[in-house]
Amino acid sequence: MRDKELRDSVDARLAARLAALRAERGWSLDELSGRAGVSRSTLSRLERGELSPTTSLLGQLCTVYGRTMSRLLTEVEEEPAPLVRAASQPVWTDERSGFVRRSVSPPHPALRAEVIEGTLAAGAAIAYEDAPVPGVEQHVWVLDGTVEITVEGAVHTVRRGDCLRFRLRGPSHFRCPGPDPVRYALMIVLP
Image 1 (cartoon, one colour):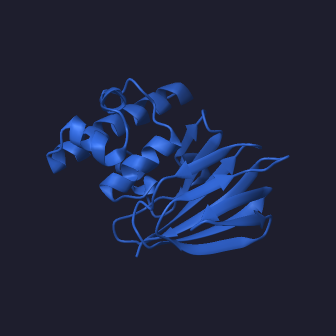
Image 2 (cartoon, helix red, strand yellow):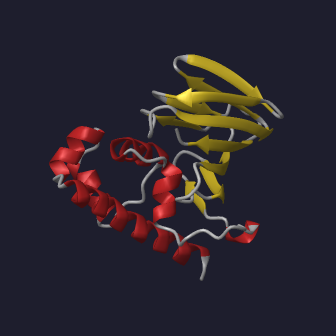
């Protein structure tokens, strides 16, 4: 399967899963719109697969649904194997923000932790309005480059080899000041 076909397939499954999550709660598009702060028309287009979500939009929906982004994306992927070969690690790209996310160790129902590789282009930034799961533990280990991470109003400059660890209870912001892209490992541990 070519890259575009694979991406389209994941986007279609993601659209169906988002529609199912809303239906499971018995929410109308208007109710979800009010909870997520996203327009009804955007949500409708997203659920019909007419719109590919940005990192920020998925972050808002994950907060409303009480899921990490990794958990949501894993729900639209096949059951992960114990050994995840590099070639089969799911990659999701938000071209609008310059963020690439590789699920190195996808979430599993029997495990509380997962590992993600994130790459941000120089000058790129991503913001999450709230913690998807309040109190989720995160460890960010920078592999290459530099990233500025804002948590609870404090800005942390994290350079190659550094690790920032925290419990997330509110908004967070990641920004790559450049001049080079940043590549980091993000370990997420559910409470």
